[in-house]
Amino acid sequence: MMEHPENEELYKGLKVNKGVSDVPTVNPYLKKRVQRRQYSPAEFVEGILKGDITILSQAVTLVESARQEHQVLAQEIIEKCLPHAGNSVRIGITGVPGAGKSTSIDTFGMHLLKQQHKLAVLAIDPSSERTKGSILGDKTRMEDLSRQPNAFIRPSPSAGSLGGVARKTRETIVLCEAAGFDTIFVETVGVGQSETAVHSMVDFFLLIQLAGTGDELQGIKRGIMEMADGIVINKADGDNVDKANLAAAQFRNALHLFPPAASGWTPQVLTYSGYYNLRIKEIGEMIDAYVAFTQKNGYFEHKRNEQSKYWMYESIHEALRDSFYHNPRVEELLPFVEGQVLRNEISSFVAAKQMMETYLLTNEGGEMVND
Ligand code: GDP
Image (cartoon, rainbow, N blue to C red; front, side, top):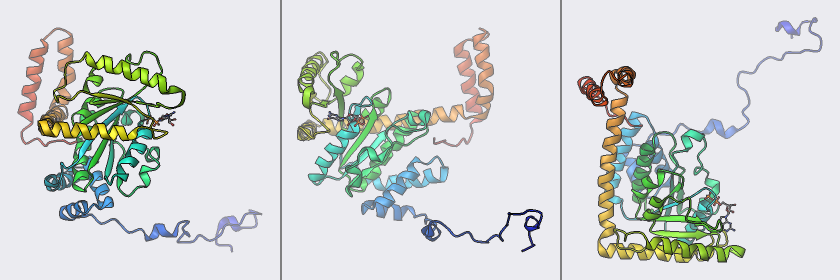
């Protein structure tokens, strides 16, 4: 008992036990957890095509990863999945916080599952980086849906620019479609630029609105209303029904003032209750009608092609911007040249030309950076 100095007489009341080499673990299963094996691209693709959700999730994690080797692997998987993708209806859903997006997606999603659909719910929430907590990240927001085997819910990729976040979501759509999901929701908070990003990757854009403020049309950016293929007024239940109907009439009137949409489709305005599951069916029917209409007039296909083109150029712009601003010589010179511009020593255009020349001269063999 004397092997520890503090066990001497001097330290009365104190007894230091011999240490144990292996502390008994609280959770015995922890030890059994084996290191996850990295699948080969072919195994990933095979798993995804079989609809294996675990493998799909892991592939999405690769898509979202900033590591170069993960990106290389992800791109290979995406490329192999592409021929199996495209077979879904992609629906963008937006609305201000509190509009009832989660509640509605839960109810509408359950409605679609009952019709034998397979639903993936993705999100674009570029604010999550700033706030360190994704508004659209919490699975428990969709309590019923998150328990269903035919639903795949994935929070917004965090970190990075809106362009980067959007690219990851677009690539995730490809993987989900290859895994057999025939309906894709892409959710975003109606507070800014992210709507445009969502609009550029979906077939149908749904705007969730609330009634009751008296001036419903205020505060909605005209651009967002113009993007909408359907405006749905939520919480049309209880005392709120009349107000919701009034708001619907106001929206219908406002929509008349817009030029006709390129799709030839007249945006519809519906009222419903996500919480009480009222008239959800009508929303589904509206989207079905839109898909049938635009498939018949060729717009469906046309829009998807335009989106593919758009994303090619977006990716190029993003990569060029990244490569330029991460160029060490550019990073070093930029503040200096900026100072020259501010002191009127050189013009903005000369400064830009100089920076571009610096970039082009020093970027030989430059690597593409993915964020
Ligand atoms: P989100 O921020 O857009 O995702 O909105 P939530 O789905 O979290 O809903 C915000 C609040 O509105 C919650 O307290 C919901 O219970 C409530 N809510 C959502 N849908 C309805 C509805 O149809 N009727 C009523 N009365 N309340 C609703």
